[in-house]
Length: 229
Image (cartoon, rainbow, N blue to C red):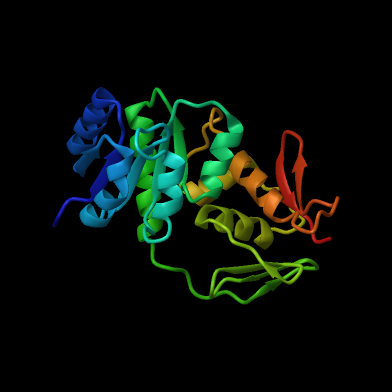
């Protein structure tokens, strides 16, 4: 059985080498690209099961690669970033990244994230659900289609999964831990902000009518709640 392919797009040669060495020891087949300008062709040619993408690259930035790759690459994208700028990370998740890790990366944490992303991407699709209709929101799980006040929303897979989870529990508080467990299948890391960032991205897309009423409410120290208003 062939090994799972992972493409590493990272301009720091030592980080790329160590990442590939660790993943190879875990049984993955890896390929390294050090120049962002070569990344898109490499994705097409190598056909990886998962892409590890550095944010700051020569030739083409991680954001540009992520945006362009999503037009043809449907597998998970894990971003590595040294940037603590929340806005940059939110934008990256909105543009199609499935998860991110802040450098320096701990190998066992990377392995856990990769395993969770691959497990989710390979999981058989669940049976069709009936359409979910709220006052301002309509979800058709058969087509993974979301409408807000009659307008179709363009959501990433991660945003859609999170919104579907909240919608199935409308009016109930869902903790960040539950979100991580349900969406990733791994324990929550209190240093990780990806759930908060997906919530932020969803709020922006669910506020296209400039309404002052947000559908997703933050319940302090408890989690999030989707309101049917």
